[in-house]
Image (cartoon, rainbow, N blue to C red; front, side, top):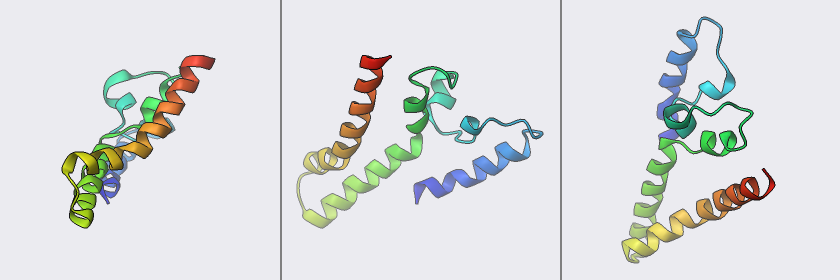
Length: 100
């Protein structure tokens, strides 16, 4: 659901681009767009381009949902919500660090 809120931003970006818009610029909430500005040829561009602000909001909602559903402590629920992301992005970062 949080990702749906980026649709107006994307529409605004398309409307004001005058037909010259790179696909990586469509996600205005990604860390690459907001902070790093890495070119797409950079090894880390894909990783930081896939992490965006809505991901953190989704993780917070998942943490609160796990807490309400299981009744476990907030720290445990936060760890369980973040764990799949840590594994995937950790392996991705490790691959880039080793092979680039």
